[in-house]
Image (cartoon, rainbow, N blue to C red; front, top):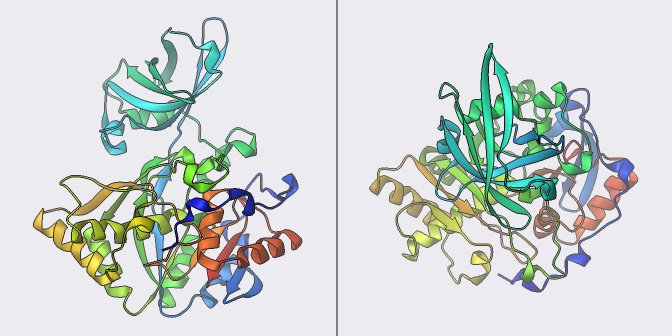
Length: 406
């Protein structure tokens, strides 16, 4: 593969007027528009027509993560408001383990109005079913833009997951510049969301309704589920001039062995179309995790794929060889899931191993998500985005969709 470290991020920008950014969802999930890019040709459709454009036979891969109410607002005795945005648990503990805690847990957080928070403990009183619960936050360490926060609460009847559900707010993307509404609590999650842990939605899936999923199944489209908990890093633009100086955020993935077995079988005779960049990164990471086993580089425990690993590897294993290695490893170690972290960066120069197309929204200029689109369809990303802008497509999280078939 060609190493993308020399890519100048300024070459992947475009003018995005504020009025093109969707501030709210459409009245119905399926009402969004769909830009179909098929081997260089562009067609304007509505999203519910997607079943007519999926290459047959196809398998759609969904990320079934669920967005949690990760924003907590504390008020100091002075009246100053401090916002604590939970990003991920302290290293060494999973989201699931942290959510099950009933007394204390530590999280990496972003702090709003950070300069006003000195060393004092912040308290938030909650009233739950006539029971007062006090949530306390203590800043243990400061990492610049992020801090390690210890949360404690005085009632073991409540898990941390329940505390967040009671006290937190849904973390809409910062460019929406508004607080979440009751409607957002439904619409900023997919209809197939199951496992809590994301602080941002896998937005490509927001367009699917239960009725459309049933129609797709009736049309012979297979579906598979993977899990990647989306972190706040998905909001961060690339600030370095060249990609070699960009530190890609890590996100946790979890995929069942049953899913990997089905994926390996279906890859041989079906088109694999991920729904969203998070599903894409998960699928491609599975290949590289298999390569680690083939090359005897993986030690026991969680897997980890670094951002440049695909470009530095000289391995030419087939998809079947890599996925079979993962499956055999899991069976030998009596594992039901493959779990770990991925920092994989997919940019022009990347050679896709598993996916054959992509369903995705329209992304911010100079973002790693836009680089992923460019890796898939080459310089035609400009043609797609110019067409979308000229034809009044809605952009970003609550915006319209595209089906990209290179």
